[in-house]
Image: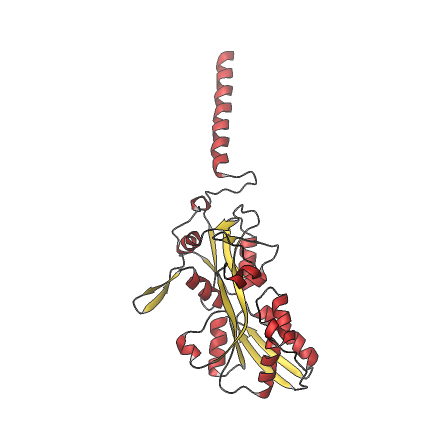
Length: 292
């Protein structure tokens, strides 16, 4: 009877050992289980960040005369940068993409094809996941709108741009002198451009306190539309214009921005191949264990 008990204990210990070894193969010491499904987080369809990222990464494909966005069914789609950050921050197995200027300690920005997402690497062209920040107007701008646009391109304006980890043209910019103008400027569009636009507006109104701004942060597509139909003075876009849009609008490059691919801080992944990113976002890769 005693030998039977001993055998039972030994078998139980062996089974537990086998189970723990099996789990260890897929789960790192910090509890990250690579066999869990990847939580794919994307921006909403109106987002310029989405348009630029999906085009660069080949998620959008040409089919005949149409462009098809092959984003995986079931992906979480959010209408703002902070919502993407919050989703990835709260999900150990999440992946998302945001403006390089919005990267913080809340999440981890990974290298793409071995290149880290930094301002220096975007400038050199080594980090290719980048897009322009555009300010758009239609027809002849008012004197007030022209003055503000001049400020955004000035040494003071571009110092704000570069101070927020975007790439500007500060070296070629001239000093701005307060105009003393008054009135209201209406601005709408990209949620990615919004943070730097808010800083520019704040600095401009300190110099010109009689100027007010009305702003809606509602996505690049809405900003382009608002500029085209004249309901707003300035549209903000974080993607390039389509041919039809470009033919109707004045285009000003405010900055160049990298798009960072982000994961949860508990994810051990530090680098992703571009092919794997595309595979994740199109549903060909569903688990972290399938990433190279």
